[in-house]
Length: 126
Image (cartoon, rainbow, N blue to C red; front, top):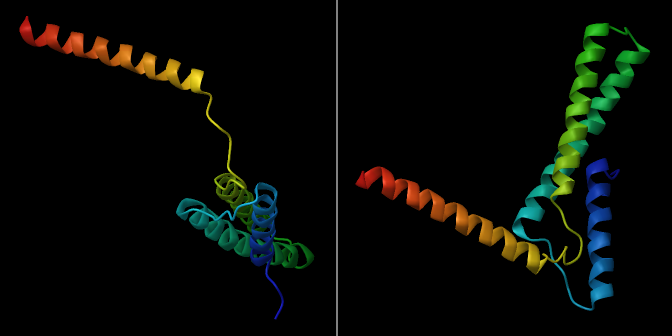
């Protein structure tokens, strides 16, 4: 049986994870969200591959403009979905958060919450 486009995509990502594991010297695994994203990307990739064959057949056959436009639009949507899903997969340990930026963001949210609390207490007591 021939390997599907989605299966090839999954193999590529699994191989990249294996390489990252070797580089870091520890076994990395996909987390639940990444597994779901990869599964969705695989399914969308397989649908896109099948739909591309229908598009090619229509282009070689009747060349109905309406059908070609609809198929083309669906292919673009699948491309977008695939990119979205694989964008949610991180190979390796990911990017460390900048502690200074985190502290600054927390301080902004703390001040924002204080202002909201002050406004709420002013409105209730007045």
